[in-house]
Length: 525
Image (cartoon, rainbow, N blue to C red; front, side, top):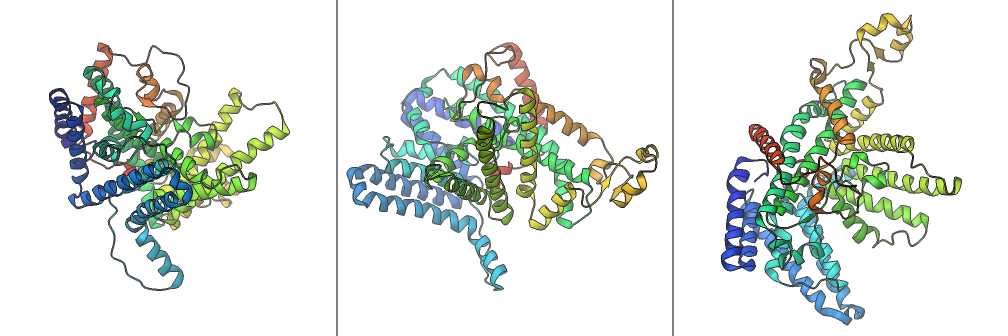
């Protein structure tokens, strides 16, 4: 069941809200939580009921392991706790490895060894990457003695809560479990519904109008790259930028919708997306993009490898390993591995540059308007290059796209420009420049709509406030990296008729686009 579907918006969500609040009012919070768990499991089973056994088995296994780890106490020093933690983490990774990486492993072995081992195609269960990482973090915290809540029903909701189950955020037990006992769940229903519904509608608008709209300009270009069709410089860059915006608004839309849905039930989720294309470095980018995954990789992998405690060389190795595994987490394919390695290299260069600048110009900063603008452009360029690997169907398609973006497959310029070059068109033609129009691909050549899309979206991502800032008066999510949203502004949301009208208008527009049903891009991970 998709958030952007009629059955979710008009049937499942109203029924879940009604049952939850009626149960809470009549029989108390515990029954309400039980109803929410059942609703979440029903939501998960909508795709394939067979995988209910998988998620419930994972919940029981990890809850039991966490309970035992919490009771070990001083026995951790004797090694029992470490052994139990190892068994728990291994169990989670084995399940994830089988479903997500078994086919990739067999295909890789066949390619390298020339063998012909056949493994039936394994269907990837929805959300397994997310609830696996979430529960690994819980086990590690239980081993460290940081968990205190051991109610099974609350733990079930912590893992299965439907707004964040399928594509995150990857929530932390310290953020969620206390909310199931007191606090947010007793706040006024009207406030929760109005705030949550507004955020949900903003996210829905991003998905069904913007992300799905710009997808019409990215998908054909990447499909052409798979087929090896010729792509000129501007065609390739147009497709790459279109996908850059598609992924941005798709994931931003999902993240908003998850936060909005949770708030309708009186629950706050951690912020997972905070204008990442405004980042002025790759370090800053990963504090803004998929923030809860970045936190998990930092706290449970990078620090576990030693972090920056063992010298700069080891620090850079740890960064590379962390991002390499982060890329592999996103998908079982070499394009994802290389994408992760590329971002690892980006981070190493970023940290090395900061260290070099402090040595070269002690006390001097690059934090000036011009410095920030240049840093933002360079960061954005690096991110776009990475997204080509992330999106491409295979390495050949990625190579074809990147070569085209580098101009190796030719650069086409407007035909009317040739007479104005004073004879330079001949040597330019020898360098691969043609004067047949900037765009040759059908998706751009016969319409200016795609260019207007790209230009407008540049303005949105760089000049407009994000949802967290618009709703900043009410702190709709936990900002885990403490971004500064600034003082209150006139354009910030509050309970007022003009905002109700605007939200209703956006909801009507979104409803008209719901027939163009499409999954969220992060569902495949």
